[in-house]
Image 1 (cartoon, rainbow, N blue to C red):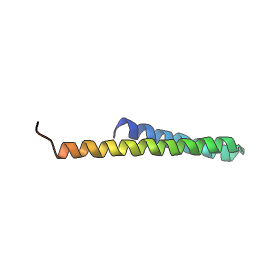
Image 2: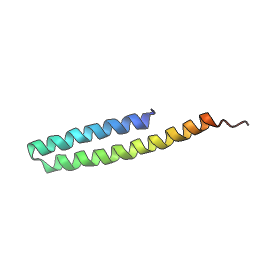
Image 3: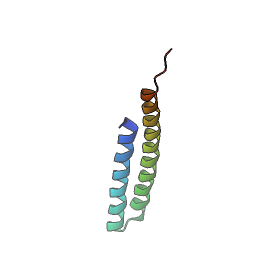
Length: 65
């Protein structure tokens, strides 16, 4: 895993906790902020996934220059 993947997963988890906390205490603002963090985390993780695939490809197909 690379940094973006790790940060993305962490942000998703924090967002889920914040969303559930907002639901428990009846605070819609916290729910919205939690969902927004999850979306940002998924985007960041997706970017990390793409970077990982590119790195894996380069490891499997080294170029000779």
